Amino acid sequence: MRRTTTWTIALVTSLAVSGATGTAVAAAATSPQLQTQTQDRSAFVAADGHTYDYASGTTSDPRAAGQVAKIRTLLPADWRSRQAAALARFGVEPSAAQDALGRAIDPTHYQCAPTRLDAFVDGVLADIDPSSLFVLSMLGGFDFPTYDALLFGSTDDPAYALTKDSRNELTSSFRAAQKFWDTDGTDIQLMAMHGDVMRDPARLARLIGVLYGVDDTRAAQLAALVVDVVTTDPGLARGDSPIFTLNAFAFSGQGDPDPVISSLPDKLVFGDGMLDALGAIGVGDVGPRAVLGHEYGHHVQYDKNLFASPLTGPEATRRTELMADAFGTYFVTHKRGLALNTKRVLEAEQSFYQVGDCAFTNAGHHGTPNQRLRASTWGASVAADAQKQGQVMPSLTLDSRFESALPQFVAPDA
Image 1 (cartoon, rainbow, N blue to C red):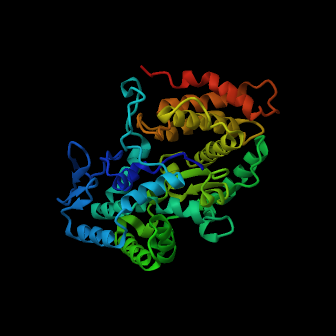
Image 2 (cartoon, helix red, strand yellow):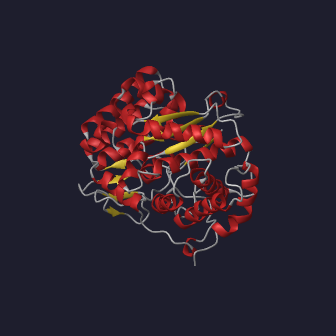
Image 3 (tube, helix red, strand yellow):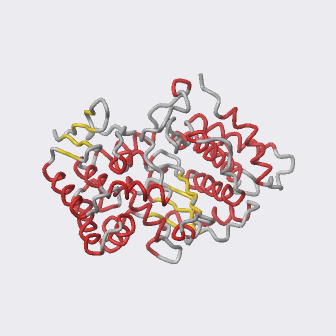
């Protein structure tokens, strides 16, 4: 099974999945609510005075402690390993803040700094009660909308329909990508990921039952607990907070040995939070189409088996992500693609590719902001420099040229 994300929701799932693995958390966003962190960063003292330890799953907050205790009684004894196994099985990327086995890239050679996205997430987190973050993280709740769309989403189900504001633009861009690339994209389902699943007991129970293997009764009780947290904390906006859906991903399960995974259709999924973030950082005019171009680039990789390389770990993921950046920008600026204004596209990408991460040792490393901008600029230049603008370069030819240019993209900034 192959799945990738443009923007992982690691900015908050650094909280969510740390509970699954027991590793120390290192939050990417520093909210006013999350003020004082201990040296190992697995615990912090929030503005409310309570201590929240994500590694051990303990807190001095009596309400949160009670809710977590109830969660533990409803889950099997091996619930943490099941949570980790679900991440691996369904290809949901772990937190970019999670420790990796070794340092593959020296971060002192690259420029990484807080971005507009960090500020956006800071503002969202500032409105959420720390106890809600803690309880949902213990259950892996911030990943629930992603799991739900992955496992149960369908273009035939109105629950996963694109929003009215984005539907026409994304649908027309998607159809243009299907015609542009020399791959068969007719089996890809374009759909949305909404946070309303977080207030829907039936959908949550269905999902929790799959993830944890609990019976219907316990799944319903856990779902009710989640709904209570989400609907009583104003900062979570009854599930409509962008923190739940700050993601977009391409998925293909073709050839996976797991029959459940292989039975799922190819998908390209947009989270509502992703669209909110793009608008908030000032790139709502071209950002969604550029993200779609990136994600469709992953489907080109799936179809042409371009994920295979001698690279491993962070470098391997960085390669595929930078390739998708390059392919996506090639498509959106090419005259036979979306033919968007190159200057505006690159200006926008300079803003939203600032989501390039600095988790150098993490297997999900997508590339630094500078690396992502270099790759996208290269993609636009290839489209602009083509002698015959009416022709589209075969994807394998474009890949060959990308591989030759990759060392330039990842060269140290200093």
